[in-house]
Image (cartoon, rainbow, N blue to C red):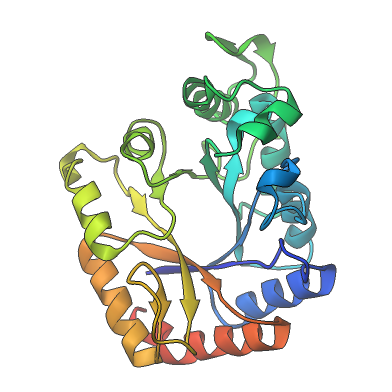
Length: 288
């Protein structure tokens, strides 16, 4: 199973040292990937949790130069709030410079105020998301030049070179727990990346899309919070002793996941690093 780590790129305690220490510890401890959270300009009414946040793509580039082998992802990049041609170029560049280590999870977002602040239409974000994913995959196809003529995006003979190191571009997972997000993941993406769903809810959702209708190597990798020190959290989290967490992950695996991107719920960097170490030593060996 794939295990990734959500980096502390947001919140009042987020800083260069905590981000870098967590990223490098995750690599040294054998985790598969590290992940950046994305917001750009939330209005103050929506900014309680993500008002202070490091920009995802530039942080991805920074960490590409500070790590050697761990994969680098966004969980999730709010794609309809960005120009997909610019994103295609940025991600292709980082993928090339990192020797093909980038993963991209994208979502439609939830803050109407943030869309307004950035000058984008909140109400057509779903259809723009669909086209934007197609734009990314077209521009990463390796062709000398690409033209695209859609309802929202239109360009002719665009050149994106160098191409990503990964042939066809980095995998694109679709974030979001809705039925629409899952359908989009199956029809346009390479995986589904829902946020904090219980095993039973995940199982029920996946049953709406029979396995033979999913793309080959389709990934189901939710974002889940973990806390070893509490035993009173809901079933859509990992909590309690390492043995209990193992049983919870086994339930998720039975429900259909192929991995998990984990937010380690810790008070400070030292506590977070200890939780990463404990997970790598007492939980991960059960799944590798």
